[in-house]
Image (cartoon, rainbow, N blue to C red; front, side, top):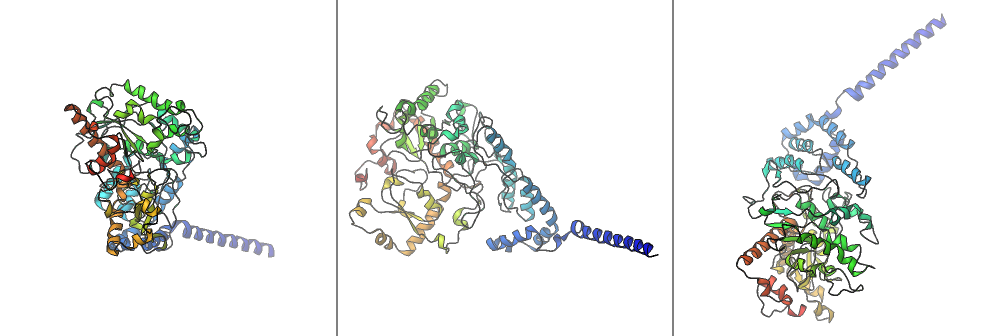
Length: 555
């Protein structure tokens, strides 16, 4: 009797246990708990967003709130799916690493938006680099169109190389023209040079510098590795960018230019994607002069033999040099002398050469901004001053001193502008006569010039000079500096700014205007470069005249 009762109770106990298990399973996996606001990861994200952007959350209508709640479970699944492909291999590019980096292009996913339109935008772009987007109609259409843009996170490599990019890529289903009605007079032909002058240098990135490995700086289209998001940097757009990586960044930006053509006879200018700075950097220290010159001599010989060179003898060609001009102006063929002689070769005298610092006394090189750490992927891509708390301790600097270094210029000039800090120069060659396409000639509106000799002889006090500036003018100058931010940064090559012109856009515009002027002069059989002596180039370019000026003693 006792045994039968024990068996019966055991059966009842197992039945109760089974019932509890089924109840637990239904609660955990079947019931939709997302209706309880605050119990999902997205609710936490909403709370964070409301703290960071309270105005944005206040703009949501009641219908938006209901929509967010009703789609919460779908969003969770979307986030989980995105996270499953999120991991990215940031290893140097080369061999297996290159393949790994290409595979990772599906993974760079940032904060998931939570509005109806934002969610659709995120889903449309889930295979690309997802950033925070506005919810306006035009922005949404732009975001959908941007999925067509190549989001490969690797630099230009053997397999990633495009012989020529198809002309006039579109964004959002419309031709991307930034106010231009057509590409007439704006077509650019990219010269398909041998890979040894660009791609192979990237493949062998570990040999580009004698003291550090450049591979980490050349991932993400030359932008470098992403900076971690923290209290200092925003969630998107910040990279560990090397100041000498402009050649790679510019080349990848050129691949997205809206008016590329495969027909060189149709092009207004020809771009030569030679990574000059990366090439010569391998031999700047401890190598023979002939070794430093070999790459440029070989390339120019190759260019002379191409049909594109002949119509204007290379005057419609341009290239970007990612180092300062003095690394390419060696005047004597001695091994102890510094740099290469690229800019002194006959072919380069005909070309337009873009560099991060130009010579005030020569007419064939033009300065364009150093690459900074910030590379936005959209017009609303978290521009630094748009997100900064101006009252914060780390945003309190009003003036940023920019003395000469081992040359006229320094990258921190552009870092200070990005921070909304008024640059203080001590030599006009540090910015004013350099970046003619990017900085306004009325330099007093955004900066201060204190002659360096006056400081050396204690004629003036820097602090006293700055304190003389009225507070209202300081505020106005700071606003002018902030307005310059889009003009001195290079957008992420995997996307484009919709309405703002960045440093790349202004550079291309400047090159097109210069070469069109040269073309007109050739038709009129004259050469304006003979009118101005090299020693006065800086003066003519900045002021448009050659009479005496108070800056003469600087040069």
